[in-house]
Structures are given as structure tokens and as C-alpha cells.
Length: 55
Ligand SMILES: [Zn+2]
Image 1 (cartoon, rainbow, N blue to C red):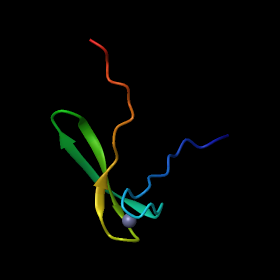
Image 2: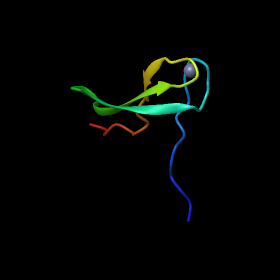
Image 3: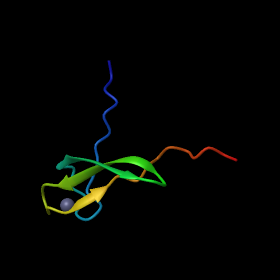
Image 4: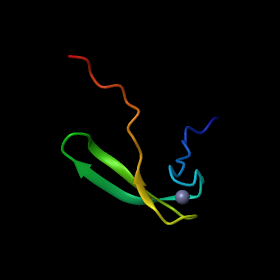
């Protein structure tokens, strides 16, 4: 069985030592996971990779 866990990388220092810091709700993009890098301590949100529904 393969795990589908996607490792979130820090966009600043590219470390994969990131930890989840809860979620942030945005009106435009819905619920987005907030993460914090353990290496540099910066917080960031993962960009959503979901294809937007075509109108
Ligand atoms: Zn970092």
C-alpha cells in the first residue's frame, strides 16, 4: 500500500520539516491548510493544486 501523503516543503528554505498549524478559511479558496517550517520558523499556506471547475 502506498501512502498518499504529500510532503509539504517550505517555500523559503525548501525544507520538508514542516508542521501543520491548523487551517485557515478563505472565502475564495475555501479551507486551506496552514503550515509552519521548523527550520526557518516561517508560516505559509500550501497552494491548492486542485483544478478549478471550468465554467
Ligand atoms: Zn523554511
